[in-house]
Image 1 (tube, one colour):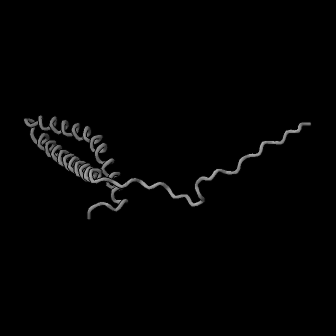
Image 2 (cartoon, rainbow, N blue to C red):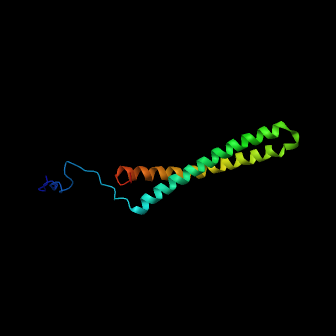
Length: 113
């Protein structure tokens, strides 16, 4: 048999205590707060323009259907629909970050009332 003893494992190194607190997010800056508002406003403007384009396209379709000499209005309505479809990704790309940023600002309680 061997005279060697098994290796003794060291005691646990001091580390986090039993009560763990999650890390706090850094405070938001004035610029961050300003951009949150700007992005939300831009998204609202884009949504309003999309709604106006949809209503205008319906009016153009009604005018195109009323008289065969106004058939070009139907094509213009289709162009407006294409613009609406192309604006959807822009609306999402501006609106989602704006809402997330605004939510973070509100959670930190620094949003002006």
